[in-house]
Length: 278
Ligand code: COA
Image (cartoon, rainbow, N blue to C red; front, top):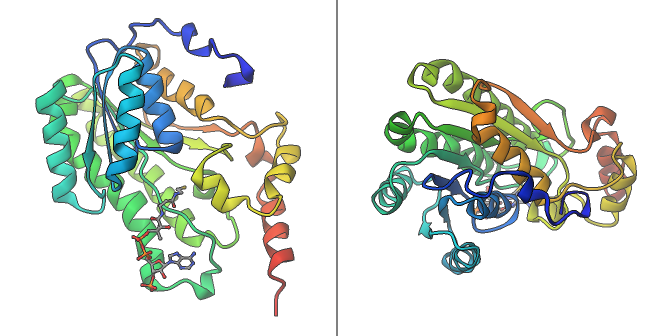
């Protein structure tokens, strides 16, 4: 919870998103589920998509337990047709989407020289191409609602990280696409922004990035002295999607406790300690 205050969501009006439709790719777990939960708690109808039916079902049950109308659509964001069908089904069930969250992502640590073409492409396809698929599929609905797109970026987009060349390329591409869409679709009233989370506790991304005790060192190296929570990210998403941000488009919003200010050297030294140069 934000600063251990479980009441953080009450700082927003409880019906802020009543009658609104929110679609979250990769919404079955982690940061994306946290964002979906944030919107559900403020009255939105929430559609999520992902690859794993079991995960989707569990997430939908949790969103419904908050009193939201929710549905899960099985779709791999790499499959444009499946994404089109998911957005169409969500539109039929809940009405046109007001907020699209492009969050589906993949990550693993791999030295650039060992990364296969397929490995590089897998992450670019999921993160970058998948985000384009969702934005493209949602365009007509977003145009009708004068809606908002939130892309989930990362520090790798603007800072080099060792063994993350694939992720950096994908996330930098996302931020560039975000700015292009903000520029091109602004005339339809569609806003487009990125959130760049830092290391977020209890997520698959941080489990993959910060194994072997690195999480504790990252916590110490973060100016605000802790890892992030999924609620920290949800709070930014709620703000950016709300009327409070009606004039905000084309921005990358870093939510990382100031971690990026110190660079990625700690991550680099940790990785290289584990795998010294041969
Ligand atoms: N190191 C090096 N290469 C790897 C790898 C690793 N740890 N994991 C996968 N790859 C490579 C595979 O070898 C394959 O390339 P190849 O055909 O040349 O061998 C390519 O990536 C695709 O792997 P595959 O497992 O077939 O892809 P997938 O579509 O099933 O999975 C991933 C996509 C790889 C991104 C997988 O990690 C994933 O599904 N992640 C989702 C969850 C996640 O990453 N969450 C954190 C988000 S921040």
